[in-house]
Image (cartoon, rainbow, N blue to C red; front, side):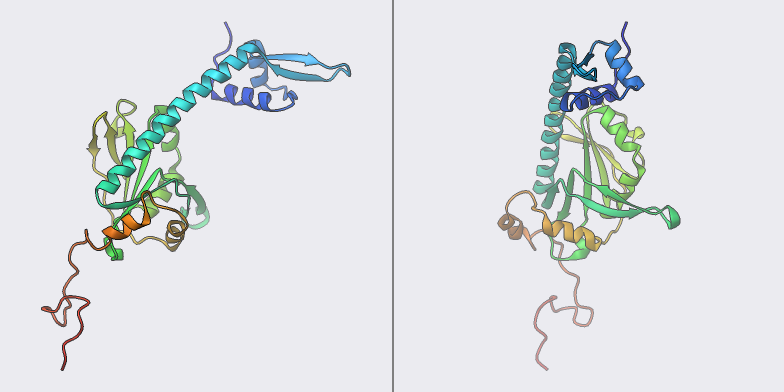
Length: 253
């Protein structure tokens, strides 16, 4: 009976496949040789290299198909969430790369985060933006790996007044996700809120504005501009002239 293989073995197998096959001579390599996924060979000068066997190639192909299916499912769910945000009257971005400083004092460090969906309301009033982060997970292993990254979650909370995990039905219980994040379950035909996200008042950092300026939101810019001003609540009245709508010219003396 061969050793139990894990993602570390598959990753090493890919590295050997893409390289000249020089051995590392560690225990991962020993287990791959023992499983018949690698084979040792010597050239005329006596130098030893490694070759991926037919069984190893079959394992790589199986892993590729599984990863591709998971990636396709993930992208499809990201698209669903982004479209829902648009239908809710929001501007949505996919694949933003955002940088935030997390932690305090000597423990502070920079963290990179790439939220699957980031959205703000269509508005010209900064106080009404309500930025929201959605992180999408379709596999339990990916979810658990993400939850271990506290710095990443802390970074999300710096750009999102609400932070949600959208999970495929059945991969986790809502109570497995930290309470600072909301939980939404993706069903076949709709989304079900398992736990609302705590809502915080948040002003977007300048770095986020720069990232948004460099990125392209989903849909056309013309569509986004058409919504501006249409979904906002009315501006508060001018305290000095409560009967005069904001932005109106001042009355003649």
